[in-house]
Image 1 (cartoon, one colour):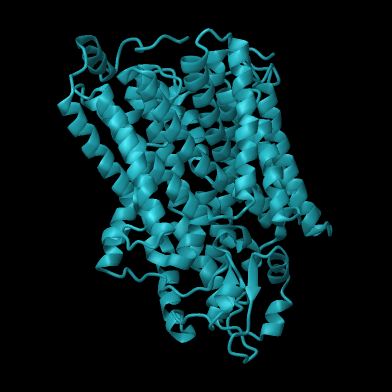
Image 2 (cartoon, rainbow, N blue to C red):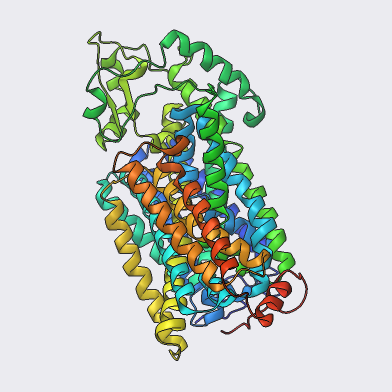
Length: 619
């Protein structure tokens, strides 16, 4: 078993301890990855096939993650649940960014902007703004509490097994919904890169995920996520910089893509963007859609309201997601937790600031007749002969249909699955295939890092809060950790089984997860820190009513045909659930006895940055 202070077991022989050498270790890692990328580029020029390069990219990166997971294995509770609380702020920021930037951020968000235009920027605004709430309302205070999991905070702050159980229930529902989306993303990438069916790809992705997290818990996940962040951010930025310069818009795409937006608006009129596909064509290709929304149309009225409510739902959901909040339990101090949130925002900003530019340049590559890569307006026979069209069509993620029978491809005759826009961008833009392999590796890193965090959050809550705190408080450490690992496998297998059914797209599933989390957890967490009058009956009412009302509203709007209230559709049901949670918690708290003096003193102490944690290191 490796040493707590050196998870890599002496693999890197340097002066000082493991934490002191982290910059050097990840510097070597980054250099090694860039050398591997250069080697793949050389192999491509020597005639090695695209399929082989794609397989090598995925195999190499997953092997490295699995190696880190193996080297970080542990049987110590503190290391397994909170990485020994020794992760420096900068590295925890990188790990949190990887944990956060899931398949939805890397794979699906730019695709959402590509098809939905301005309205989908609400995801970017909400997901970024949520970290302001995390920083101001949550992270430092939960770290000061010294808990292992989010239900650990709820259960200790309010007391009682029912409170802890409800927190576990909300966590499991929200995180499981989220993890199916991530496994869906790994299946999408694996099916394309390895040319295997999607249903097989999701199981390939699950095995890769478990290799990283099963033996080392939070410690393994932390050091793996840092490595995954480096891969995913390189993979996301490089194609955008390449396209911006190739299309002549400038060196820094994030600042110059306004001209590309203007060009798209000019082309939208010429290409008649907004016309619906031919009758029956859309239903012929389930899961695929044609471009029918204007790129920069802000709508107004109800559209503006929907933008605001979607951004609000994503903000409150961000501040309620257990797998993100538990990352701040791993820092050495309260101050480090606060600094870590800032670093998280910096690392996340790099990708979110780039996503709209990526969607814009990709759309231009397809639409602009002045570019050699454009396909709209070309003969359908010629389009069908293009290699990237054939490859994505073979795995059922793209289709071309001559709806009006004129033999020319119109904008509403190209059907694409939104989740492949980022992955297909290098091929669409005519970049070397080595870039496609890099992007596939980045997408896999993003989906794996988030899935690791989510599976760990679920397994830790069930093993620590349900099994150890409620069912068997006398369980030995070894037994607790075995239970946690068995649960990781069982939950992961259930997630892969659900993902293989393709019940919803990646972005839709992620939005539901956020709404479940905010419906049940946001106000019990916030008021648990900031309102010492909040008591156990109020917290129980807040979680039960919030989750119940939110779930009922989702069912009625999505499946029972109810007209949404003031435009709050299934992507925004958390607004209804959280409002019900707040009302129930405040009313029940005020109608029942206030907490005892010891509990109120504990809440006051949580808000003091200095001093010892409320809970001991072993609890």
